Structures are given as C-alpha cells and as structure tokens.
Image (cartoon, rainbow, N blue to C red; front, side):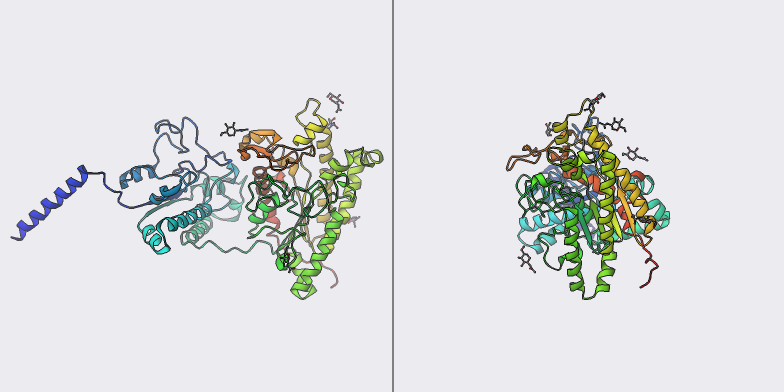
Length: 553
Ligand SMILES: *[C@@H]1O[C@H](CO)[C@@H](O)[C@H](O)[C@H]1NC(C)=O
Ligand SMILES: *[C@@H]1O[C@H](CO)[C@@H](O)[C@H](O)[C@H]1NC(C)=O
Ligand SMILES: *[C@@H]1O[C@H](CO)[C@@H](O)[C@H](O)[C@H]1NC(C)=O
Ligand SMILES: *[C@@H]1O[C@H](CO)[C@@H](O)[C@H](O)[C@H]1NC(C)=O
Ligand SMILES: *[C@@H]1O[C@H](CO)[C@@H](O)[C@H](O)[C@H]1NC(C)=O
Ligand SMILES: *[C@@H]1O[C@H](CO)[C@@H](O)[C@H](O)[C@H]1NC(C)=O
C-alpha cells in the first residue's frame, strides 16, 4: 500500500513538472538578481564614463548582436546564470535601468573597479565597489517606493540572489603597477590580501567606514580656478553665480567657474571631507574649523591684478581674511595653543599667479608692468612677493602647503582667440611666461623645505598635467568651451551648454570642465608619475609626521 501511494505521488509530481514545462514559461526561480563586479560582468555601466575601460564598440559583442559594453564576444557568466535562473531578459545595467525594470535586479558592475577606491584610476572613470554599493542603496529606495513600504521591500529583497566578484583589479590595476600606485611599497602580498578582505568585509556588511578626513582642515587660497562663491557679493565682471555655471553641481550655480566641481572640491572628497570647504564670504559659523576657501576670481599675487574686471580679493587680502579665521578658531577652541596645534595639522592649497600675467602683464593697455619689467624680471618680482605671502601663511600656523604651479595659460580657447597662435597650437609667449614663473616656484619650494624642517611645501605641476594629449583619456573637444561665451570668455547667461560635457577639456573660455578637474585633482592627490607633484603628492604630504622645529618655546 505504502509503495503504491509513493508511485501515485511520483506520477503526480512528474505530471505537474511536465505541465509546468510545456505550459506558460516558468517564473524565474528568484524574483531578482543583483550583480556587483568588474569588467568580467560589466554590461554597459562604463559606456557613459570618461574611461579607457570601455567595450562599447566592435568587435565586442560580435556574437551578441552588437556591442553593449560587455567585455566579451557574447554573453558574460552572469548573463548565462540569469538564463539558468529562468529570467526572460538579461539583468539591466544600472546606467540605463529605469522604472519597474529594477524589480528583477540590476547589474552594477564596472570595468576597472576594485575593492579599493583608487584601483583602476589610471584608466579613468569607473564605479568602485563603494560606488556600486551606493547605487544599490539608491535602487533599494526605488524598490521601497514601488512596493509601498520598507518591510515589503526588505522581504522582497531578501529573496534575491546577489553576485559579488571584485579584487582582480586591486592587483592588476593597482598592486602590480608601481608606476601608478604605492600599495606595492606599502604592503607585503600577505598584508595586502588582509587589508583588501577587511575593506571588502566592511562593504559587504553595509558598514561603509566612517572615515575621519585625513587632515582636520583644508584652507584654500587662489583665483577663479578655486573660487566657490567669494566673488558673488562683489561688484565685478568676474562672477558667475548664474546658469549654465553649475549645471552639473548639485546646488546649481554657486559662483564656481565650472559646470561641476572644482579641483579643490574633488581634493576635499579625496581627503575624506563630507562637505565641500565653504567660501569665506558665507562661512560664518563653527564650520570654519574644517577649513575655509578664500579664492577669488581675477585675483593675483599683486594687488592691482584683475583691476579692470572690478572688485576681487587679492592674495594679500585673502591672507587678511585668513587671519580673521585664525582668530575665530582660537575663539572656538578656547586656547591659542590648541588652535596652533589644529592649524599645524591642516592642509593649505595656494594657487596664484595666472592673473598676474593674463590680467596684468599681458594687458599693456591697463597695466604698466610690461613697461617696467622684462618677463624674467617680472617672474622674479612676483616670486619675491609670493614668498613673503607664503611666509605670512606659515606665521599663521601653516605647515603642510601645496603650491600650485601655473598651467598652460596659452592654450585656453580665449587666449588663442585673443592672441592667435602664430602657427603653434597654443600662444607660446603665455606658456613661456608660465614656465618661467614655475621654474622659480620650484626653486622656492626647495628653499622653503631647506629652511623650515618643521614644514613641507610641495609644487603641483599643473603645466605637466595639462601637457599630455587629452584625446588619450577620451576628450574630444580641445579648443572650444562647452558653453557659448561672452566677450570676457565667460558663459553667456542662461544659454544651454553642450550635452556631452565629459568630451570637453574646457568648460568656458578659460576654465577647465569638471571632467578635466577630476583628472587634475586625482593626479594632484596621488601622482601618476613623479613629475606631477614635487617632492611628493598630497596623499603623502598629509601622512607626513612633521617634527616640531627645535626652537625656544
Ligand atoms: C550665517 O549666515 C547664514 C546666511 O548666510 C545665516 O542664516 C546664519 O544665521 C548665519 N549664522 C551665524 C552664526 O551668524
Ligand atoms: C611668429 O613665428 C615666426 C616664425 O616662427 C617668428 O619669427 C615670429 O617672431 C613669431 N611672431 C610672434 C609675434 O611671436
Ligand atoms: C618660448 O620659449 C621657447 C623655448 O625657450 C623659445 O624657443 C620661443 O622663442 C619662446 N617663444 C616666445 C613667443 O617667447
Ligand atoms: C632661507 O635661508 C636663507 C639662509 O638663511 C635665507 O637667505 C633665505 O632668505 C631663506 N629663504 C626663505 C624663503 O625663507
Ligand atoms: C609623466 O606623465 C606625463 C603625461 O602622462 C608624460 O608626458 C611624462 O613623460 C611622464 N613623466 C615621466 C617621468 O614618466
Ligand atoms: C555629442 O554626442 C553625440 C551623441 O553621442 C554625438 O553625435 C556628437 O558628435 C557629440 N558631440 C561632440 C561635440 O562630441
């Protein structure tokens, strides 16, 4: 009897199975499938990134019906797994997944990505594991919206399959590339594996490390390249708190001379700050203990530079403002000695000099300097004044100082339009002026480091970083800004800018696009090669344990 019952059951089960298989297509075995990884499973997430790690062209996809971004001639392993799980379609890439599509899962994988943030950096844009986890969090919020509440979403997501595969690039595009990364020197193979697994485990547990910034505060002195709103309240032509500036910045136009983040914004991120460093013009509370940005468009080392454009805050005045901040920090921390300790540990970025050329020396109709000085003498005079200003900054407690050299001021669309290139690709006399200034700045860095063993000054080689072939990192437009410019080389208000902004080196007539800034900031923070920053890059500068100078107390 028992046996017979068994037999009946078996027959029924077989029949059910059969019926299922020939009937309507089976539902997948899980409601959703989420994928995290690198190029082995990327299915298009890098297509919109400025990256060398892209596969959105033939012969990739030749057996798939065309290129999709998959790094294969056909399907990837997760495509096949999706089929075996019973999904009708492949899991969509995060980059293009829209609407209810996300309910069956999303593929977050990105070629060149690793467990470590910096991994794959030399290839350009990529979505690191922490970025993929962030994107997952955004998908979770959408799932909550679709399903009505968090409990339902948690219940639903608990039934999904998650595939996570990272780590190869942390070796191939990090540890074993000593020309780009320092991990090979920092860790033995054993230590590196341990450190990777630690990071991996933290991310998998959904506990992104709450990282303290690497320095307690970040102070910024400079011109329009770093200005983030200090000119907004001034009567000047050098102010851009209007659209389309800020089109790619979360808060829209802020006074930044860029479509998105400035170099110092990206540096603040790399240093681990949660917020961007506030402009002096608006920073009135205790937020100043994390740093202040004093930069002002049109400002120079010399007080008169940029005068023909209207008001601006020269380097001398930026230092006066810093003195105000120092007094406020003493107030906030309660003790002069505490404030001094705090200020000693901070990072100071100083980038000045461009306007002393383009808005002074090379405008003989407004300024006398070119009549008074040869170019060589002028560089000497500028550096002499700059030295006094830097020493004053040191007096206010600065010990770790990044001095940003001049870039290729002769290669901006505006310079080329104004001066012509006489057969070269850029305006030679402007670039030559930059180089003369830079040579003396490097010598000053050496002198300061010799004289002050309790401090470290570095030179950031903007000129070198601007000198490579931009098309090699994916830029397509080198000689025109992305927006329609007015007679001052600034974006005309409220005109629609170009769509593909990551294709452009320049945003307006003078200023680099956010895409350029990302590369410059990344190289300033962590040099691609030895000539990017001298004698070290910012990632090393901030780790330095400086000895107190042996002097009387
Ligand atoms: C700082 O300025 C903002 C507006 O810019 C104002 O709302 C705020 O009350 C000010 N805070 C202090 C402490 O003065
Ligand atoms: C233009 O180039 C020619 C040939 O190289 C050179 O002789 C001349 O001085 C240049 N002119 C200017 C204004 O730089
Ligand atoms: C720029 O410098 C180069 C190399 O020193 C020199 O050959 C060239 O004549 C200079 N050009 C101008 C326009 O000053
Ligand atoms: C460095 O020290 C030398 C010798 O004492 C001095 O002549 C020079 O002015 C100092 N330079 C700076 C930048 O402090
Ligand atoms: C550093 O990189 C730049 C651009 O990528 C290149 O032009 C230069 O030759 C490199 N320098 C060294 C010393 O490798
Ligand atoms: C911008 O992108 C579109 C579509 O990808 C392309 O057709 C166009 O040529 C691009 N424009 C520039 C200036 O690169």
